[in-house]
Image (tube, rainbow, N blue to C red; front, side, top):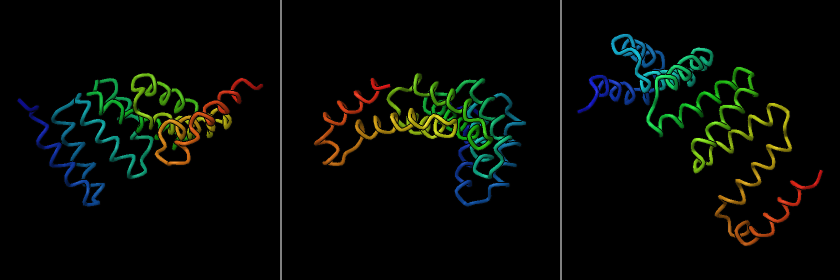
Length: 164
């Protein structure tokens, strides 16, 4: 049986694509008032607030959603959103922690590597950021040239890690 709030949340999310951000945020807040402590509502409210550039408010709702608990797919998305909000708010060290946590919890989701690299660069760790991006490129590229030289690239990349 579906949660009593789920059909209404789905209807609100369907309206979100129409570009009426403030109306969607208002509707999500009202839904939250009627059905408090639902992580899925908080994560959607956070995403909508972040999309509207309201990052401090989004941050609060991402944190609340994660504290309440989410299904794995939504949990991963909330961690990405939280990390991005932290970056927008000038908190790259916390963003790095968030993206590292996502990598640990969801090792097959390579987006955490890319976001971590962005956060590391923002935190002044460009060498580590570049290494992560190079690893992602080598491991995920479907480009024929990258694939053909994957072994050489892995060797050279590993050698650079050992060089002080």
